[in-house]
Image 1 (cartoon, helix red, strand yellow):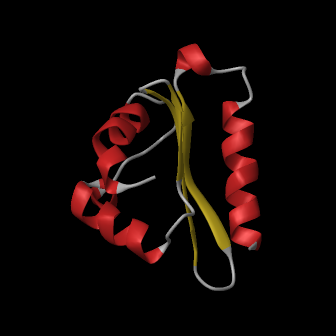
Image 2 (cartoon, one colour; image 1 turned 180 degrees about the vertical axis):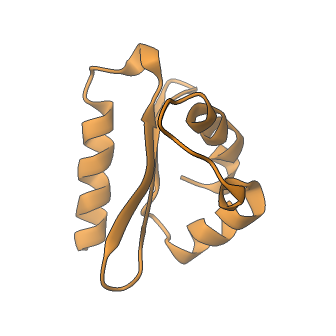
Length: 93
């Protein structure tokens, strides 16, 4: 995920039941978050359509999955599981 994905990712999260957005999900704080946790947050695209996104970070001891969402029409295809597994792999590294 890069800051260029922000508007599409935020739109997905805002439409997803159970995902609660705060001021930290705005573009400025998100850019700082992504710079602090490079390569940990992921997006999945189908062509040029955003299919899913996972926001992940670490504090040096623990890893966190903050938001994970897959668009309804792309669910039940393993995208969410793949995002989680890749985030976990990157946290281990």
